[in-house]
Length: 373
Image 1: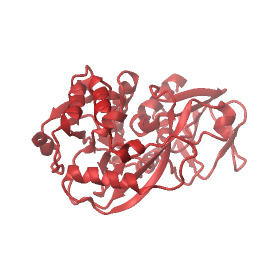
Image 2: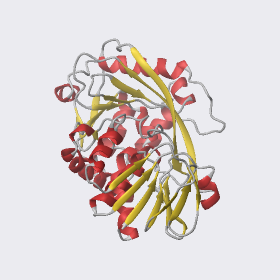
Image 3: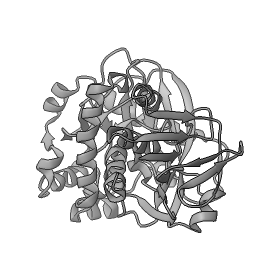
């Protein structure tokens, strides 16, 4: 079988991986020299802890298993089973963490509530003041800026993979066929469009208005911390954002404890992961209303700096990069992904939202199973 994959972000790359793993030939087309969207502009987190129960959690857990297996074969992914800690402050945040630990699926996530001393034994860099910490053993991380490159190197070694950069697919031309802006036609047994947040042009032509929205975020990266941050770290505001934490306790937190005004205005939470070079990736904000701003603003970065410094008990290293990114999210946020056959032999797979890096291996596996690869 020959599979045409359009889009070289992490979702597209994992579809290519699944096809090659199953013995098929892949032609992989990317409109840029390299993917430049949300697949690189993220934390690199394999984030099980915040996922909703049911299909979303099952997908994340399966993806976590697949990531670990791929990471063992492709060491340059930088896969690390580091887990996560969410320090909590005050009785209201503590109650949300306690409710999470009491969930029926808490064991599957690896939830455990730690004292400050226990949390610092797991992650000694957390020297600031907090009352407890929610530990999630199943969380992990990879290196987002280099993951696609590492996967592509492994795919090329198979002898059944061709990468065609700097080609924008412009139209579907019959069954299982697309034409790019070089005038070349690519025909296979299946075509999978993994175009991320690019929802106009070809996608609108073949699929119409799909039930997917675009979300903009701001993030930053620091110089090396100078010590190991042995887990990823979130803050209590992440409880307000991730569906796993919905409970009466969360309702009480939202009703009785207002967010910091900057955090509320920018729909913020703290997530933080250490890169292999020792720097920290820190974010993030959420913007939903179009048109998106073209610039980044400083107030969210100042807020994140204050939160991080309160948890680390020390000044943040110099910030060396700031960026904004856009990802595609299903408007029905209970859906893991939007998967749609748009023409004979042509499928669109988009909209995993902030779950793309976490869930992409399992999303691609499901596509391959459903299409009979």
